[in-house]
Image 1 (spheres, rainbow, N blue to C red):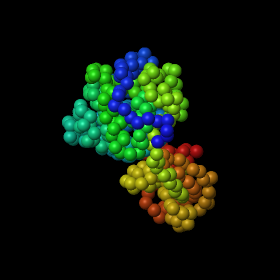
Image 2: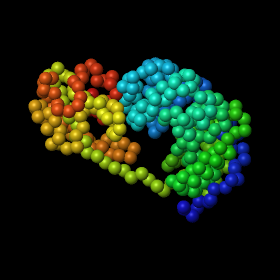
Image 3: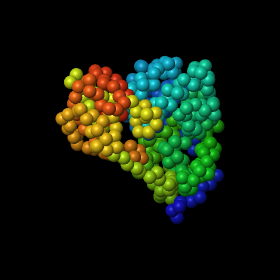
Image 4: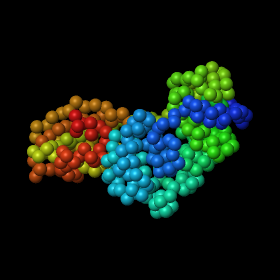
Amino acid sequence: MPETLIRPSRDLPEGFAHRMVAWQRQHGRQSLPWQNTQDPYRVWLSEIMLQQTQVSTVLDYFPRFLVRFPDVAALAAAQQDDVLALWSGLGYYSRARNLHKCAQEVMSRFGGAFPRQAEDLQTLPGIGRSTAAAIAAFCFQERAAILDGNVKRVLTRVLGYGDDLAVAKNERALWALAQDLLPEKPADMPRYTQALMDLGATVCLPRKVQCDTCPVSSLCQAQGQGEPLAYPVKTRKLKRTSATLWLLWAVNAQGQVWLQKRPDKGIWAGLFSLPVFDSEDELLAAWAQGHGAHYIEPWKHVLTHRDLYLHPVRMTGTAKNAPACEGQWVDAAVWPAMGLPAPIRTLLEG
């Protein structure tokens, strides 16, 4: 732990919640399409979409999703392939699969109504502790603390919390502090919760701080130390890995492309993709009757903790002589509406 950081204290900043609520009312975000509602379906959908995804991107997907699946019953009744197709491009596709499973469990276990308490919400697929608290706070005014990445940054700086969050007991301690900081009035919970999100997204940024516009700067121990960027402390980092993938872009005389559905686990699980091979030789052997092999310029596709080096090879042939791997010929008018990984969609469209 850097010498400038101090040990966490149970002495909580007085008036923190009140200042946050007042600031959000005057300066926070007010017009996002998932705000100003107590509909748990919309709040839940936005919370899942916003995980690891920028607001600007979600603004495009959120309304389209609601048009196709206006409520939890419609989503539960959908085919998973349809859900993945609409999610295509958002990434982290396990979110979409869990979204579908969660909708089905809301229907089967709770009669189509989201449970009102975070403890129960947390038992549903894809809903962790922070997401459950957000839904319960926004929709049912439960005094439940959220602690996503933005909020961890805000609270560790305000509290001068310098313990390593890679250690489970230290994160549990921060959860306890977050709960202690909640406003006393349940009616303040929606705006307080939104204030934490807004402050972390617009003012208390990872590599830049705007302490002059922060409503709690005078309470902030990190700002008082002159070391706001030193928080939060998390030493353990996930090791990046890489993989080289050879992609068979097989096209027949009718303009159809050969697509296969990926396994339920692993890269691009459950999506439709060009066939993937570990080597050039395996790819060429899979369609020995294909001809005119055209090697597309390879590129690196960056995932959160993994780099994919993609090597597409475009080959042509006839519909009768299909590649010797799982898949099916798909018309050019059909595949744009299917659930495709972002790099595959970019390749086919380009």
